[in-house]
Every structure is written in C-alpha cells, then in structure tokens.
Image (cartoon, rainbow over all chains, first blue to last red; front, side, top):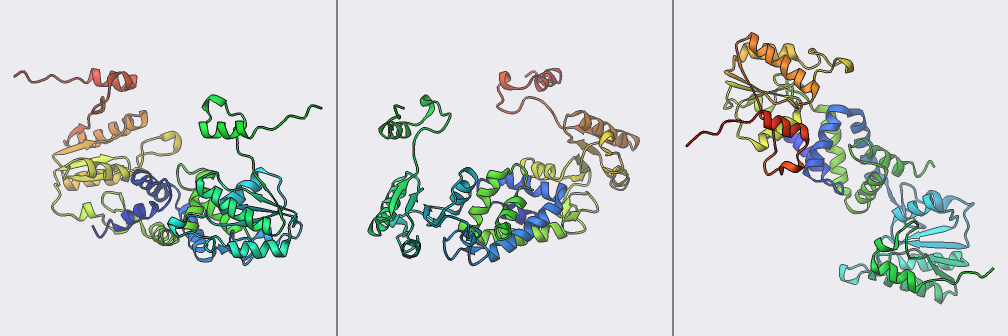
Length: 201
Length: 201
C-alpha cells in the first residue's frame, strides 16, 4: 500500500510512545490530522530538536540541552546537601513536591550486574569525585526499595562513608491518607518495623 | 527556566495528543530521551511530513497524501455500492473488519447547525455529484446513532432517494457476545424494536 504508507507510518511511529497500542496510535494520528495540525507540527519540531540536543548535565547527569543543567548552574542552591536519585524524572518529582534546595546527582539507573549495569554505567566515579569536591554535610539516598535499588543505595552509602559524609535515606512507609487495609504487605511490614517514637512533650 | 525550556516544551507539546495529561506526557518525554531516541527521531520526521503533506482525497474526502486515495484509485473495487461514513477512521475500521469491496465517501463529521456544520462543510454537493457519476445500485449509511448522526443519515438518504438509489443502514443492536444485562437501555430498546423474523426451517 504505497499511498497509504504515510498515515500508516505515522500510526506506527506513534507506538514508540510508552503505553500507546495500535488503537491509541490510530486515534492520535486521526486527532492530529483532523483537529490539531498546528499542535502536531509543533510536537514534530520540538521532538526533533529535543532528540538532537538534549544530553546529560556534566555535573549531575540529569537531562539538559546545556553543558550544565539549571539546578547545577543555580548558585543559590545549598551545596551542603546532595541528593542521589535514580532518574531525571525523580529530580522533577522532588523539585515539584518538596522544598529541597540542595544539589542532586542522577545515577540513571540501578546496579544490575545481570543487565550489565555496574558502577561505571551509573557514574559512581563521577559521584565520588563530586563528593570530594563538594564535601557535603549530608547525602540523601532517594532510591527505590527494589533489590537493585537497595544494592545501589548500599554502594552509594559506602562511597559516602569512606569520605565521612553523613548519609540519610528518604522514609518508606504507608502513603499519606493510605488506608492500612489497602496498603501492600511489604510496605506495611516496613512501616511497622520502621516505627518512630512519638515525642512525649 | 530558560535552560529547562526544551524538556518542558517537549512535555507540553506531547499534551496535544488525545488522552495525554501532564503525567503521561512527562513519562513519554523521559522514555523517548532515555530509552528510545531513534524512535523519537523517526516520530518527529514522520509527523512533520504527515502534517505537511496529508490532505483529503478529491474523490472520497478521506485522508491521503495523494490526490486520490488508495481505495479510490483501486479499479478492482465495486462501483455499484457506496458507503457513506463520518470519519476517515471509520473507513479504516470497516476495511479491517468487513469484506466490503465497494466505494466510500467520508463526510468528515455530522450535521450540527449549532456548531456551524452544515451540508457544505460535509461535502454534500460533492456527494451528490459522486452519486450522479457513479449511479450506484446501493448506498450504505454507516453513521452513528446520535441525534446529529440520524439527521446526517436522513439528509444523505434524501440525496439518494432523489436519484432513485436504494439506501440501507448498518444494523444497530446488541454487540456480539454482549450480555443483555450489561447493554445500555437505548441499545437494548433499539435492538428489541428492530428484531427480525427467523426463517422457519
């Protein structure tokens, strides 16, 4: 079908997006072509530019089209706290939800030797160097609680310990507003074991 | 945030896609940049080309990058049956699901005077002309059963009646495998009223 190729190719290309199957891709293609051509043209231009020019920050390894990301270039941020996360999206989530004003370091994944992801792939040398330069008072571990996340947190914790940097880890437990009966067993056990004494006043 | 602009702009642009909110757009942007840059580059190129060059078929008004779409150019299709649908996606759905080998005409919407969509916007003149040229033995109405769909079907039916063309309408009723208790009342009433006598054998 040479002449239907372009529409079919568009539907096909849209499937590179996560969570988009054949039906959604078809719906998206028709929506753009019938209702929002200007939005489609803008998306095409921005996407091409983003794929071409967005790389990694030389200091914290997050995604940016510059040599240094906005957060690393911001001289008003607190150099005494460094937060280590797995992905660039974690930086965005923490920035949106918390009042954290320190520095970040993005590993870009978790230690997973079976998948060929070792300390080198996660930039652990660069993190060690950053710790030496920055000499932060506190290093915050914000990895997930998967087996790989735990191993990664342990590895990063060792790097910090060797340099005498105090390490903390974000709290894992029952989400705010979460009903106990709907929380999964693992989280509940973790929250129970990690209970804190309430100040007696 | 001038230097985060490109990533944010990408997330923003992705929201032109139907059913994509801020969270999905963010997820899509990070997925493309971290895992599938080649897919992203291809999508950008195909999308730009599609938005630029896909227009409407001069004969049936469906979407195509050529003057005539593949189906209109196919000389082996049956000229004696013309199926009138609302959208290009309906053509694709019918082609995928049915063995229909006739011709199509795509209105591109439904009569809706309040939204400024009258016979001219739906190409009714072009349809009339097509009926005069083609002189089909049967015209199939495949509109939806909304109020506007019914009005549109009635209008097209009149065009056909004026030319002595026999008109049929696709069956509306309980979907195959649909349990009666889960089918909406309107559909059930329609299916009940439109019952057919079973051949006695």
